[in-house]
Amino acid sequence: MKILVVGGGGREHAIIKKLKENPTVEKIYALPGNGGMALDAECHPEIGAKDLEGVSAFCKANPVDFAVVAPDDPLVLGMVDRLESEGIPCFGPRANAAIIEGSKVFSKNLMKKYDIPTAGSETFTDFEKAKAYVESLPCPIVIKADGLALGKGVVIAQTTSEAVEALRGMMLDKMFGESGNSVLVEEFLTGPEVSVLAFTDGETVVPMVSSMDHKRAGDNDTGLNTGGMGTVAPNPFYTKAIAGECMERIFLPTIRAMKAEGRTFQGCLYFGLMLTPGGPKVIEYNCRFGDPETQVVLPLLKTDLLTVMQAVQKGTLKDINVEFSSGSACCVVMASKGYPQKYESGFPITLPATADDEYVFVAGAKMDNGVLKTAGGRVLGAVKTAPTLREAVAGAYALSEKITFANAYKRTDIGKRALSQTEKD
Image 1: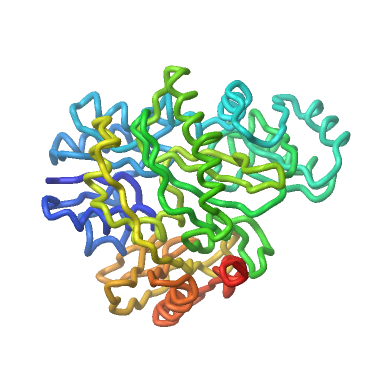
Image 2: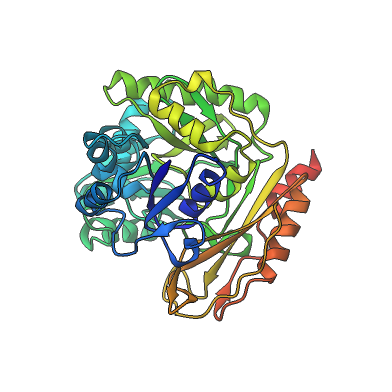
């Protein structure tokens, strides 16, 4: 089989590595891919992930048997709809279902309508009204841009002035473009955060191993929000009892709500959860695999990924036994110093040989005259799977020490909170 994977980050690299395990896969195309994926896929950096016309033309010139559309932007833009119209079976939701991430206002209204637990909120399109509202609230306050914003359209304001500045940046200064035309002002929830990715064909829901993301740039969750500085799986705060409650009160109700709205969701649905004193609540939905959650979840998947993806696409997920390892995984993201703000790139990267339980998933890198060089904020993720979380964390950091490039930066405490919880239990 010939497979197309749309996207070019560490998430896509993890997906490609897993798809390669299927013996029927003879070739994988990555559009655009990145320099570090070259050993695992045929990359075409000239074709962007949002280029519907370019991807379509490529598929006509290079017929593929199955496509995986991984990032949010092309899903929201209708990449799956386009490829399906040309006879290519796809893993990923159509545009009318991808709106669950494409519009936070839509997803919030969906949760309110179908009684899915979430934070209380109000929606605004007028800056002055939004400003007056936040000035009437106690802090902290959560401000969210309605549309896609590369995972950075959320501000947890500790003071009223911070909240007003966040509103100004989104609504007046258009720091996220059209995504800030509408904003959500939400109550601040407390409790451990959990990421749960789930395979779904619109009827059956199969949650994957839970994970814990580390969003802040600095140790001890300080500094600016990023796309994610590391992950561990499973998340020790996510117990069997909580998982059962989430299935009954959140996962299945969400899938049924989308179907009832005429927006059947087929693909990977990401549930960002907060385990509050009042029970688990939805912080956000994503219409795709998370990044860097995918980098720890897929290495623990024992069932063939392509088989699962084809079952999702065909609507036969209930017939597949999806199994995960009982072990743990840790991903340590190595970034360019200065990320998520200003940083320098273009530095050569040295990668080590890896064992069967080690992975280097490359994100922000390019190939320059045969030399792999940094080309982004988050450069790569060093991943280790092991029987215990402590071994996985130690192994991921040991692997990261063997990777070198100038200006490298990483957090030193990935998994610290999870280990504290695990060893307390």
